[in-house]
Image 1 (spheres, rainbow, N blue to C red):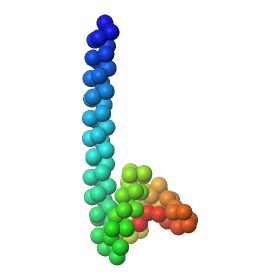
Image 2 (image 1 turned 180 degrees about the horizontal axis):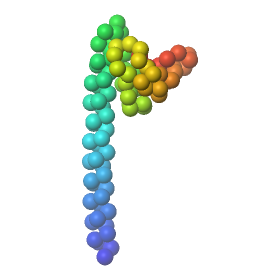
Image 3 (image 1 turned 45 degrees about the vertical axis):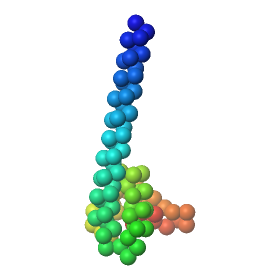
Length: 89
């Protein structure tokens, strides 16, 4: 009885860890795609991609377009840097 429980427990752990890894990969590709579209016109593209990626992971959304439209994603809109200015491009 104990061995079957242990085997079942290990199977559940292995299954859940692979599911979490796949979910993280999906979020990363989603953010990469959305941020590339958002930052393609930016003068400081690397910086825009960096902060957009940070905001996307935290908020799980990116506003459409290359500028503005932040009302589509309140979390993205309301994130502030240490100086009190908008963090997300």
